[in-house]
Length: 281
Image 1 (cartoon, one colour):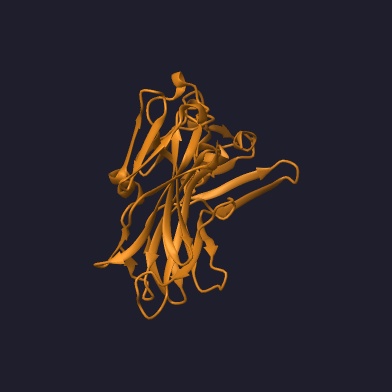
Image 2 (tube, one colour):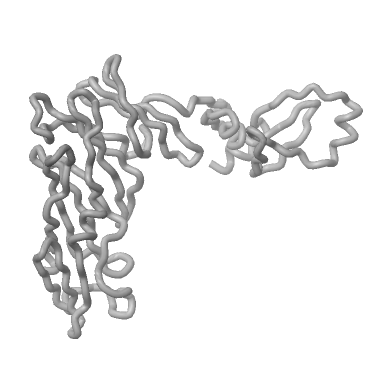
C-alpha cells in the first residue's frame, strides 16, 4: 500500500563512503541499478547518517522479497516471494512458485512427493479467492486417473480468466487444445435488419429478439463476441471450457461451451454449444 512504501524506516543499504565524499555528493541524485539496469524509484533514495535509504517496495523488488510495514503494530515483515501456493485436499499434490511485484505467481512447479513437473502458466496466489485448484479424473483412458490443475489469472464483475493444465499419472503433461481458438473457429454472430442478433455455434443458429436486449443500439458496438470470461471446469468427470458471449461492454446474453475428448494423444475440443440465458430465450 502507498503508506507503507513511503515510510522513512524503509530499508537501509549500508555503504562505506568517506564523510568528505558524502558531503560533496549529497546534492547529486542517487541512482539505483540492478544487474546493470537502472531502476526507477517511487521516492528518491537519500543519505541518512552515512547510509542510503530506499523505499520498501523497491527493496522488495531488488531482493526478491515481499516487504511491508504495519504502522499500528510497528512490525516490518520480510517474506520470500517463493514458496507454496496451493495444496490438494488429499495432500498428494502441491503447487509452488515465485510471486512477482504485481502479485501474480509464475515459475510454477507441480510437486508430488519426490516427483515434480514444470507447470506452465501464471496464477493468483494463496491469499486470493482463486488459488490453483486440483481435480482428478480419467480423461485419457489410462488405468489411473489424470490430474487437472486449474490456474486463475483474473476475476471480477464480468471478468474471469483461467486455464487448465493436464497431467497423466506419471506427471507427463497432456496436450490440450486451446479453448478460445477452438471456440472462435465455430462461432459466428451478426445483427439482423430488425435489430435482433444471431449467434451461430457448432452449426446451430440462435436468434435473440431485439426487445430482449438491454443494451441500447448505439452502445452495442456491433455483434456479440467472446470477451473477458473464459472458465475451464471439471463437470461430471469431463473437462469443459465456457466463455461468456457479450454484447456491448457489459451485457452477457449466454454461454458458449465446449467439452474435451482425448484423441490421438491430445485433449481435443468438441462441438461448441451456445446456450442463451433464460431471459433471452
